[in-house]
Amino acid sequence: MISCTLCCASVVTIGLVPLQKLKSTKHAIKVATLAFVFCCSIVAGNISLRFIPVSFSQAIGATTPIFTAIFAAMFGRVESGRTYCALVPIVIGIVLASRAEPNFHLLGFSAAVLATAGRALKSVLQSLLLASGDEQLDSMNLLMYMAPMAALMLFPATIVMEGGAFSEVMELASSSTYFIVLLLLNAMFAFLVNLYNFLVTKYTSALTLQVLGNAKGVLATFISVLVFKNRVTLIGLLGYGVAIAGVVLYSNEKKRTGKERAHTLEKVRVGHS
Figure 1 (tube, rainbow, N blue to C red):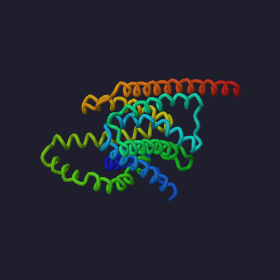
Figure 2 (cartoon, rainbow, N blue to C red):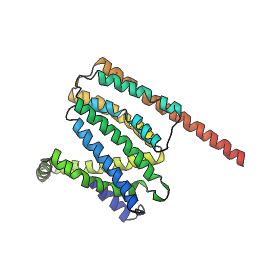
Figure 3 (tube, helix red, strand yellow):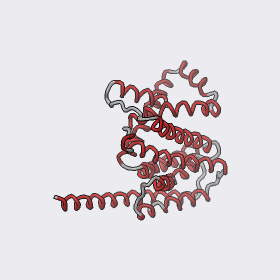
Figure 4 (tube, rainbow, N blue to C red):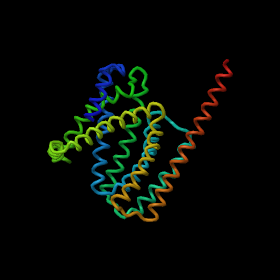
């Protein structure tokens, strides 16, 4: 988050992106709420990984589109019925994977679900801030305001959960130039990931962002199995496969809905001309 703050501030300062000011205290509170939800999802996700393997955590994370659809509907952003039906296989797949998980842990599972819901709520809140009339912010400015708030909120959690991390970083940085390069690259990629997260939300939707994120989750699951040698049962693999099929089904449905919407708008335009 510190790297995001510095990069965004640099881009705005040199004039590549115009500065947008927060309109009011209420506007600042909305951005702070977004930062708080983001931090909660990060903390819950880290807690979950203490008790369950990465593969299982990613499987639970694949249900993020379901939470996103629920939160988006609560804020008045409703998709078509067929789009919601396309999400059903994702839920079924995760249920299968969860029941077959040999390393199931209730606290880890609960934390992973909380992190998943937090990511979903964050994507909906950021979509509202990126397209909310007078209070609309572009992706760079929203990240510039959210990142320092999130850094301050995450600092106490970092002290509690990873108290020795700061001294280890300083020790490694003082003895290895290679580590410093890796650290800087990691910071740059963190900035780009968060920026693209906002850009995808702005130009598509919160729900599409989370469905696309499942592709990353599938890759992380298989890498986890290969690297950490986590045990996966046949039923678990079946569950992952069904969830992936649900993602493909959703993607196809969104493409079809987009074409129908574009065709309808074209007919309206021709009718008025």
